[in-house]
Amino acid sequence: MVVEEGQILPGRALPSAGPCRWLISLDYDETLRGHDAQQPVPLEFFELMRAWRHLGIRWGINTGRTLPYLCQELLPCSPFLPDFICTCERYAYVADDSGVLRPLVEHNAQCLAHNEHVREMVRPLLHARLEALRRDCPQLEWIIAAEDPLSVEAVDSVTMDIIMAYLAEFIASLEGVSAQRAGRYMRLADARYCKGTALQTVAQLWQVPCSHWAMLGDGHNDMHAFRLFPEAFCGAPATAHPDVLAYLRSSGGYISSTSGVMEILQAWHGRVMTERG
Image: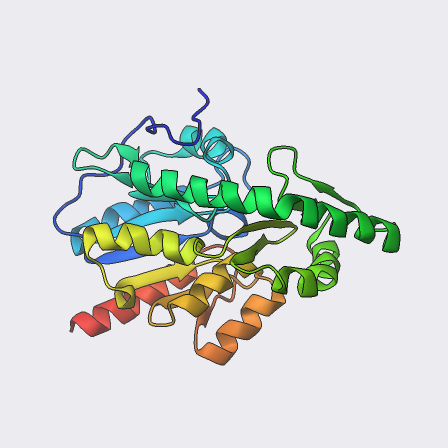
């Protein structure tokens, strides 16, 4: 079954078990997602989320992926759904009282309209700059994403580092536009929307202050969210981009000694339990 952006997701989140007090926001690729093709999200993670349910903890995936791209892998391996999903660093889906994840229709429509405006304004400018990049750096391997003319996919993260440096001055000249980057992927978007503001939209529904958030991620789009909400617990796996690791070291965030999220979650949980006394 293909789940398109804007649809209700099949399946259910866990029962709420009382008011929401804490939110865990997880990047998907290279953070929550492991390397087991049959079980990309470890079953021990789901067991942990079930065990912590009585504490008022709800969790979600906050990703640059589109909903179809996320669901084709997530749904077959998940014993239950997240409490929320944020896709494309902007769209939000939230579980209702019965556990069904529904799109935040008004919010998502506003995101779409604003980003369509950015697309019309920026597309010719970006493509002209990318043509210059192709002439100046013919050795670089990259493409414009077929489904989004403001998205660039490089062959690897190092190549994207070079592309971002080349485009930095151009991007800075675009008023109201930001670059949302994750590893070898980058998209230009309306600057009012990012992973941090998507999570904020969800948190406002459940009245959870940002001091009660845990944000975990490995890429520049996660670092963007960390900077917007420094009151949150921010963490990254050891395999995160060097820029992300440097930021967390300077800001007092948590860096795991391993890949994955389990160590970071246990460190956050220990801090939460200490605060609860």
